[in-house]
Length: 303
Image (tube, rainbow, N blue to C red; front, top):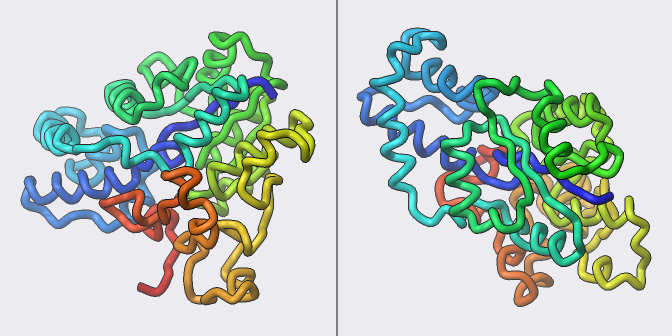
């Protein structure tokens, strides 16, 4: 495995918390009730302009109404401080580990370049990304393979030597059409059932497990120093209650946890990681100052 291509939103970048806050601020300035997180999630698949018009316009195709909506959204977006905080915990460590190991990194996202390029630059991750393709008017949306083909061609990587990591069913379908390994990023997906229905090659619950997928694909053995630095379980697709995520609440209860608590809100390995990697030591909810993680995943934890 020579290259890992990532989606951006809800994979490396926590746009969900940012977007919810911006939708609330936009609604307040327009003098209307803010949409619920559930409603925003249900329409999150729409192209950005249609998404805004769905909630704040007369209908999703009322492009002539954008001039009264988009500047408000953008004004609040530009007021955001500290973009680095919106990387998911472990992302910076993951990309730096790939750089040290010689694994090349690209990005394919359906986000428009206006937002994507700002966020990539201000996140501090741009020097670690060899090539990024954000959605332009002449490139179709995923699962059309055009964007991924462009990334691989510009990086001179064969599909068989690459994997595509994303949070949505369109990402898995896109990888399959190109012939690349597909990896379902489940740490912030809005619809876990939909992405798993696409039968990804691997499913991972935290960014560090992407390292494990590469380690397994490239045959790194137990004596390899890169594998020794991986948190347990080192192997991909692991449903292990001793890891920072497991397959469900039943496993968490078996491990002595609270069956009513979402496994996405527990981070048992944080103490072990503390002092080793600062970002992995953060509980996931502390990495996002706007919205709790349960809203990012649609998980109801009873609160």
